[in-house]
Length: 493
Image (cartoon, rainbow, N blue to C red; front, top):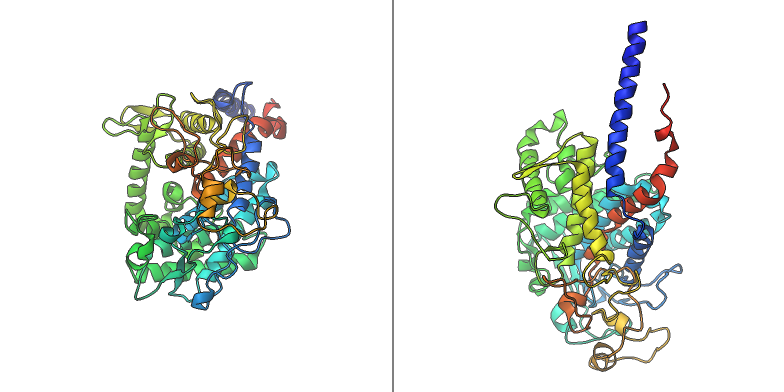
């Protein structure tokens, strides 16, 4: 009995020591007293999606400078395609980036539902997801038909109009058995499968409906293979299928849908490692190994720990991929680094790179540095999240934001008239595109806040979508964690 008591005391001591070690690493990555309000950033990031809504806006719409738009979408083709999101500063509904946006929002909610709820933003997150999935249900009019785009970038870009005034083409384009689109079908299936998990407890009927559509879409994309931009040629030059369709299909290829329906921690791509680790998935071990190898090589590249290829950084420390909308890569990298650090922490692992081994806290610390750069800790002293902080882009490349609200100025604004009163406006936009993450600075950390500088001042839904979960985790760590877990300090002998 005495020996057993001693063993229990030793075990408690080891657990306490391990806890103290974790807490030290936790405090090491917390922001200083001059920290950022991540809760505010989270709230504003979710507000942004209301600015991008197409269709008939609901009674609880919080972005009051927007109004109904695109109410006849699909009418020409005899289908109801009202709703969904505009992807950026134009008025086209591109299906591929919309699906990726919903995938990332859903993934964020699955991973960080507790943190999002603690910040009081859970319902807003679900509303943002459902606005997209409601549209996908409409767009999937047959098991082997998916409407992939409404409008086209070429004609849309000739005009500068509020979405409430659109006179450009609203022709809709689809993929089907004769005109395949495995990439957009696979991405949309992934979005709906992920969302089905999000809604499983709060709305089980809707969850089942989404899963049903996801199964059909994946089967369609897998059976009738082809790149969607070969079928929807107007997508070329805007959202070209550069890498082909296998990456979108692989988002859910190795995961049986019956398993998806009961899984609480969906981790596409990187955290599919967890999905495939069980005995019942040994036949997919080669996929697991390939995912792990590619994922960890990419993460090591972001962390500048590969021998050969690493991601370039600006002098201010920002990951830099390309001149046009570089922030889409930064925000996605921050999310993947954060979720993978969680995976390593939970499984008591470390990241092995060519130039050393990294703890989960090291990985998350770098992810946090990218978020802090976005929020203002950068050479320009500017927040690239619109509406956040004292200094942020005021001339965002966005049609609706650059022209007086339809509610205040109901006079019709024509195609070229919009260029005169909106695009060429010298002052700030009359409407703040709150929560939008713009393209960001160049490789020397320089940024020109000019509306025509679309490479730096245009924002996209998929830029912001990947930040939602990271903001939620940072807010939780900074504000709520210790107060919500006082028992962690109550070491009992």
